[in-house]
Length: 264
Ligand SMILES: Nc1ncnc2c1ncn2[C@@H]1O[C@H](COP(=O)(O)OP(=O)(O)OP(=O)(O)O)[C@@H](O)[C@H]1O
Image 1 (tube, rainbow, N blue to C red):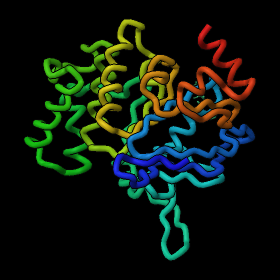
Image 2: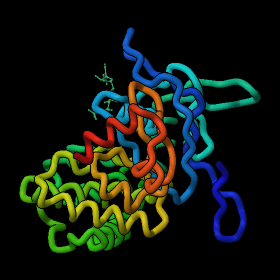
Image 3: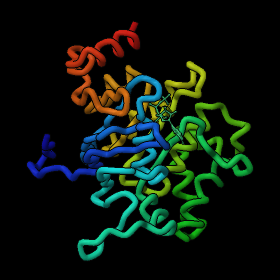
């Protein structure tokens, strides 16, 4: 599928998986994944527990090795550097460089507990990018405002609700000015009444044109915000299409059963 932007130019492909396989010992977790995510697209990945959703996302962020197939993020082969038709495995420092452009938000926030919200936001830009503290702090405060937390800059994670912590985690990822954002079940650990505030921040981000891959159980979000919904089952993609098609007319029996159970 070629997605065309407003001016007729084909949109850049931000993620491309070609027959991606991943196993943990004898356990095959990804069994030949083919997927494309274009710039500015929001793709939601849904599917039963253990179907490989998080593993696929973690492969995109260099947190897991792909065992077979090829995975490209922003045009670069994950895990490898190509030179004169030869592939070299990335060194840890090169992995860090690649990760700068990829923002990731986890289920359990993963904030540094001994740092305030503001300090959490300032850490990577000052330490990794070696940017001037004053400028980084100003931008971090703007970012906190964007997620509705300008009055919580001096609070530690333990003094914030789960929803607030997750919004800080999103703001933290954005301080690195990523080209793509990966969300791994960002609302699963939250009390139901806190889910909405995090989804609102994600909706705003989607509206700003950010490329997003979101593993989620939030069907309302997938239905209303996603450009495409991908259903995984048993390490394979069994559906990939616009939410209206996927939810109203799933092609496979397995997808239909999964959606019926989920929406029951
Ligand atoms: N580090 C690991 N070592 C061994 N097995 C793993 C590891 N990580 C994941 N698995 C296994 O891989 C399979 C896929 O896990 P994954 O977390 O990707 O699924 P998921 O679809 O995201 O599930 P959930 O919705 O429950 O989070 C599961 O059977 C899981 O137990």
